[in-house]
Figure 1 (cartoon, rainbow, N blue to C red):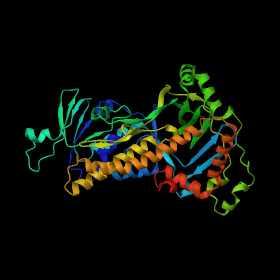
Figure 2: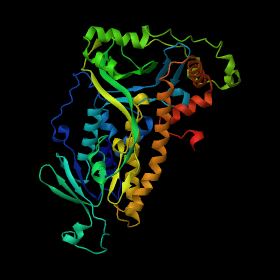
Figure 3: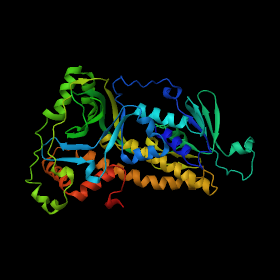
Figure 4: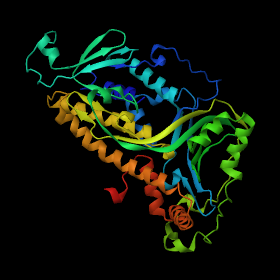
Length: 444
C-alpha cells in the first residue's frame, strides 16, 4: 500500500509525473484477481487512517476510490484500564474536527491506490513478479550519455526479476514490508526487538452499528474494537503466544465469550465516571476550558454476537533500519520501521514516508539533481527519521507501561488517564498528534 501511495503521489506532481516508474509486486490484486464484493464481510486486515493521511489521499485523487467501497469514519474513542482506575474519552469536536480517523480494509486501500494510478498519465509498468537480485554500481552518472549504452546502465541499479526481466533504475524504493528483500540486498542493518506478544485479528458482528473506537488495556496487552462499517467491527487483541494459540484453536462460541469477557465483563470493574468528583477536583484549575469529551461518561462497548472471519495471528516486534538511504536505494514504510499496533500508527508512518519522498524527489528534479544521489535521499532520511523514531519511542513506552501489573504503577496509569481526560491542552495535543497534524511540544 505504501509503495502504491508513492506512485500515486509521483503521478500527481508536474515534475515527477514524467518519470518512468516500474511497480514490482506479486500481489494478485495487481492483475485484477481480487474482487471486492460489498456483500462479503470485511476482511480482518484493516488500517486506521488518520485525518492527515486522508487529506494526503484526497490531494493525490485516491480517496474518491476508497469512498466507493466500505469504510467507517469514527468521531469518538474510549480508552480504559482493566483495573477500573481510569479512562479517557476523545471526541473529534475537542479539536474542531469532524472525525478522528477512518477504518478501511487493506484490500480497499490497495485497490483504490491502484485505480488512482491507472487513471493517471504516469509512465508506469506493473510487474507481477518478485525481486531476485539487485546490483548497485557506485560510479557517478555521466553528464551526457545515451541511455541505451552499457556505460549508462553501469551507473544504475540493476534488478533481476523472478519472471526473467531485467530492469535498470536511477532509484529503487523498498516498500516491501517488514521482511524487506530490498533492505537485505542493499545491506541495510536494523535495530529492534520482539515483544513476546502476538496480535490476534478478526472481524466480528454486533446487533447494532458500532460508531466508536474502543481500546482496553489488559494484563497481557491491549484489545481494540474498531468500527468497519454496517454492524461489523475489527478486533486487534494483543496477548502472549501461548494465549494466542489457544484463542485461535477455541471454537467460535467460546471465542466470542472470551472477546466479551476481555472487552467488558472480565479482569476488573468498569471505571467510575465520577472517580475524582465533579469533573475531577484535582484538575479543577483546568475546568474553565474543558473539552467536549471531558464531561462524557464511561460507556460499555457493544457486545460481540458473532465471529464472521477467520482468526489471524501475527508476532509483534519493533524494528528500525539504521539507515533509510544509500546511493540508488531508499526504504519506506515497514521496510524502514515496524511498530506495535496499539495506536494503529504503523501504516500512517509509512504513508507519511511515501508522500515526503515524492516531495523530495520533486525538489531534486527541480534543481537538476540525480534522484538516486545519496545526498538528496539523506534529506528524506533526516526528515522522516525524526518523526518515526518519535512515534516509535512513544508507542514502545506505552507498550511497556501497560504490560506491568504493579500497584503503584497502576495508580500512575490511572492518573495519566484522568490527566488526559480533564486537562484540555493535553487532550487536544494528544488528539492532534495522533491525527498526524502536529508534533508534541516536548519533542519539538
